[in-house]
Image (cartoon, rainbow over all chains, first blue to last red; front, side):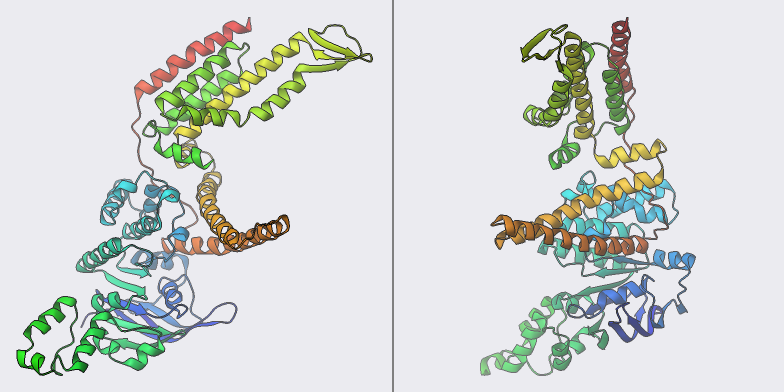
Length: 286
Length: 257
């Protein structure tokens, strides 16, 4: 049983204008897991993320890091933010400097590292996000996708334990979205805990270990992706759709082209393998 | 302005140490402004034009266009210095007398005006050299190293970045308004423009809060510390600067006598 690294306990949060943004959130994030938070616009995903590294104070309830309720004193917050990094959705509000290099160096310098160490980390982050060729360009001459990658590099360079990505693939072209997923895989292999929020059900389904579905500030369901997506009432309530893979799988079952006992495929390759193994007579009969 | 900014990042001198470029531009400007003759400003003008067009590779057309920008201001002030109005027609070098009033140019005034004109133009060319070859971010870094107060350099960093963010927003809003005929008549233009500004003001507050959150998330503790890309320091460039400035200073000293 992996250890719980980040936890929200009975969390309630009201915005200053009394909007109830989060209601009774209980969520455990395990060390090294790949967690996706799904939910429509305004479901409270970003607000929850801001709770996770102490940017917002809960109205009631608490956030625990490694089993300890976080303190909102300056020093403790800095320590927490070293461990929990957030890549925000809009790169224009994250990049404060016009120089790519300077912006990426900001986080690691705040950690109190030596200049050589910071230089090495910036270099590695540039390589990891494929932004080395943008090093000399000013941020205002970059495209949206490029800015997004630079903002990711700015957080990677801090090497946090938990990395939270708010809508990471929104606005990326398919190639860079794919490369981003490879980067996530690499980070995950290094043992980082990764939380992302997205509307992309296909990505959520095939990438994550565990899914959390939020709607109107509440967690309405959580669990393994294949189990969750096969509950139509949950999908409907959260304004989501089925991933194409599951849609296809359900269609095949319905038509009788797959035996009812077929396991749920996790990837396209799984599904192709299942189809290839289907006994010929079933296919012929229908 | 945006053109100048783009050239700063793409010219042939971008890899030269920003400190060297700043020193060169500022020294030359000081020499030009203190010049007692018209020869120094002319040399400075030629030097900077050569530097900008041939060394930095900025198209001559762009440079000429930029030099025309301050010309209207300059001509107005120069004319007011050169021309005098007087009731006595004495002492004028070139004049026209009408109804007892003489309008004309006195010779010393003409010299002052020409000198002022060339000196200003020379100084402007020095500033253009700096603006066209050195990115703002690097100028700020040099200022920081020169111990300019942190509050000023940090503000410069943020202001410079957000000029572009807000300009982009303003352009987007403007396009959205124009595509719905927001600027079809004078009346609608006034209305659209006022809405653009109020929308922009709202955005400024939202953006500043978001920026603060994002910086806090990266352990911001009240001071923006960043690492800058190192540029090689070139002894050759310092010798070159000395080689160019010393004769000009000498020329100024000789001109004074």
